[in-house]
Image (tube, rainbow, N blue to C red; front, side, top):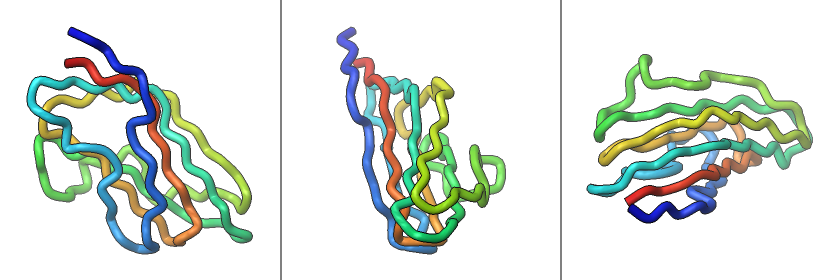
Length: 110
């Protein structure tokens, strides 16, 4: 099984819009997300959400890893968690500002 270490996702979502960030993971692939980074490029604080949707599930309260966390202007927040995803799983993000960028780093194992 080869392991590819890479940037898994980059997105700058439209404000107030749930946005697919990574996935859905393909059949025969496992993913380990080592780090998530959120950058506020704006001049005022913003809030964001991160949800993990298992096997194509719709949005629900139990999926939220982060919910309405505040990030100051011109700041980057990071999460180093070792998130594991299987086939069909996906990560969605949401921001109340169009000034946030999200990045994911990790590995895909197939």
